Length: 157
Image (spheres, rainbow, N blue to C red):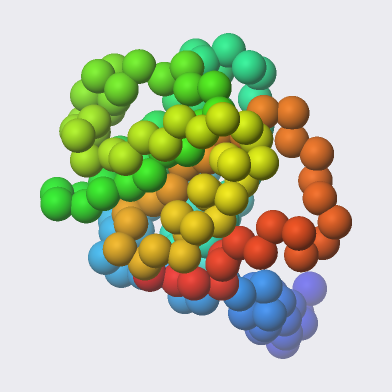
């Protein structure tokens, strides 16, 4: 592949990312976000913040997905920031977050009655630009019709 072709492909990738709502990486966080070993798989080589991510895994609370989400939360939680954790069946033991350097008192835990309530609470929390992160535990997820979850994923901090 020639240098000109490579440049065209790189420009097209940047344009596609912009159309998907992804902007240039923020410099407030470390460039590798603690994920240097897998950074090459992320757009622009940096874990994108300010957007919605989905992580899935087994139901067991000790699953890799839960650990990864908690690791990311520890990176997003800067001193004085607050996050929201929404669940209809929380299995997390909040004091255990201290092992990741997270102060559990800085997280608002919303234990809701149903998955529908969880989705509503997640959507409302995502509208708040003062939160460092929103974690939503949703079991038995069945993707709704496009637009059914109007998550404001285009908002970038």
